[in-house]
Picture (cartoon, rainbow, N blue to C red):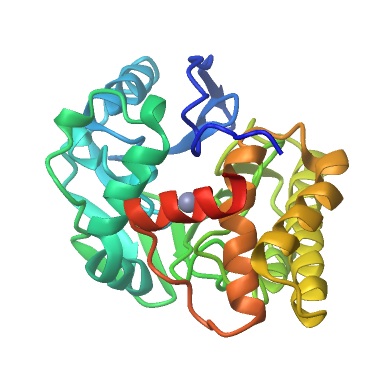
Length: 317
Ligand SMILES: [Zn+2]
């Protein structure tokens, strides 16, 4: 096996941004598989869901919002704690930053290590990293569910179950049946499962499907604008998560070590999923967490910049 560059260090090409109108109240900021942001425009205020990685990068989201509304951006909602989605929050100068209690707990427990780890994994995705003032701290924490009225527009902010992380939060516009899923759902992009609860993830996808979204903004990849596209996004994510975890469980049950399980799982998944963005980046982290969950670690272990590199050397070196 030839040595691959660490994480996303070989990824240097800028992506093209799309800002899609989903309804009078909902827009999707997507970039060919880079982390997405969602925008909800209420009667009196705007909410941004996931911020981009730095305050400087947030300015491009703001610029596009200003092309469609001059209402104030009062709320930022975090779909989960990952640095690449939350560290741009200060760029919006929001009155409130909303997160689940579980996401808040993860920021307290491992936010600092995650920030260091992610900045080193994704050099291109942290443009102007020096503009990050530090960790992003929620000002509103909710348990399981909260309803926000933006004037007459009802916005449901919900934890439907664990999957990508234990704090996963979706934003739902019930009147328009539009869902912002965060990294619980990806489209033509590889799910990152390094901090996941793989046993629980399929049931959480069931809970999303039960809402019958007509449109869905995934964590990465194009916005899904019809029920058929939503179904494809949910099924693709489920297929990857299930096939990856099954392969790892099989290997672990046979007593294989992590490196052997990684090689087998990589070969099993490559034909079906190898063309999805960040496949080579994600697989080592994904299989490591899956092996942990299949053996002795109920909860994801904290990734540090050093643990990242040790793991990469062990599996790809
Ligand atoms: Zn994430």
